[in-house]
Amino acid sequence: MQIRVYYEDTDTGGIVYHSNYINYCERARSEAFFLRGLSPELETGGFVAKKLEANFIKPAKLGDILEIKNRLIQMKSASFSLKQEIFREDIKIFELSITLAYVNHKGRPQKLGELSTLVKSLFDD
Image (tube, rainbow, N blue to C red; front, side):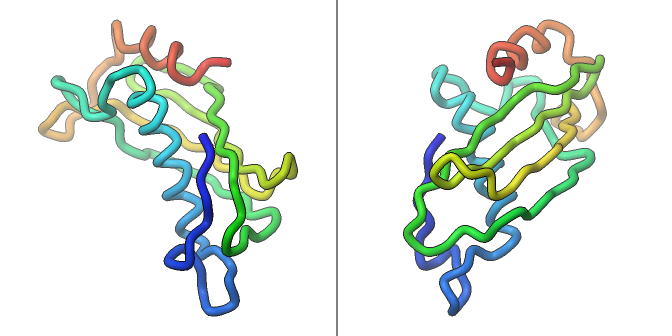
C-alpha cells in the first residue's frame, strides 16, 4: 500500500511524528481487508494489538511517498504475528513486529478457527 506524507503528519521541521508510522501500518492492515471487499471489523469480533516492537531506521518527510508491506510471520490458535515494513524509494525506513489477538465483541480472546485461512490469504506472501 502506498501513502503520501501530508503536512498534518509532520512536525514543524517536516519530519513524520513517530506515532504516525504505527498509524500507517494500521492503515495497511485495514487496506488488506478492504481490497478484498471485507472489513477488519468482523461480525464475530476483531483484532487487537497484543504486542509490538518498532524500529525507526530513517525519518520520513513531508511529501514522501511511502510503501507499506505486510508479511505474516506466525499463526497461533488465537493470534498471529506480522512484520510490517515501510519503504521510501526502496529504502527501508521503519519496521514493526506486531502480534494481533482475535477477540469477541466482549473483549475476550477467541480461537481463530476458520479465520486462520482468511488471515493467511491477507498477509501471507
